[in-house]
Image 1 (tube, helix red, strand yellow):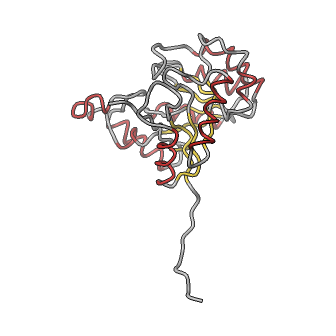
Image 2 (spheres, rainbow, N blue to C red):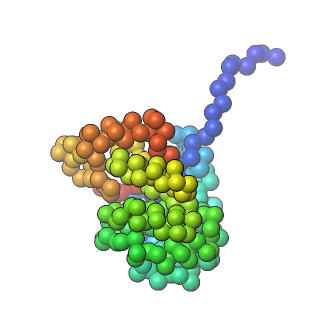
Image 3 (tube, helix red, strand yellow):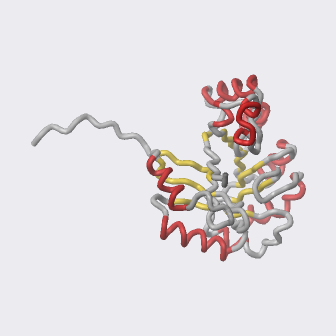
Length: 246
């Protein structure tokens, strides 16, 4: 029997934060094309967010529709998040969606499908309900301009619920999370590659291609974020992959 070449086996990657946008009005990508791209880059699981343009995943029917499309067309497993905004009035849907979702995504800042800023108090009823329905499934925070310490003091301190701060773009957020971690609160924080490899200066040369939410940081903050990631102060790298029509 011929000797097999030496092999190195490493775990597959997981991306907890993608926006495949299907089903929805954005046709720049599909679950099929996005999952294939992830597979070819070594990902075994990706987790799709809820703010699909035109069809946010805020009902059981839409959640089942997304899962059906995943089952039929995806190359790899895809987990999905539930969504609920203060104006969505979908509290009756959350108990059903919780069973099929790995967490709840809350958009407190401007982004696709949300054109306003919120305060932590606007979401307290939603977070309290989610804590009752799915105490083991995290609350994922798109912070915007809301007070981070106020968010954490309610979700993680008062409710004792696991809370993840998505796509940080500033070292001050990391310092807040590390401080509350030392107090024993269940909080984690993630960063995206574009917030450590690009800076706000790129907007001058790339225009809208370098505009995003949250925005790219100044170079001094980008360098601090890279350092904090290298030192293990940031819990995870998440892509926030989000296709857009050109």
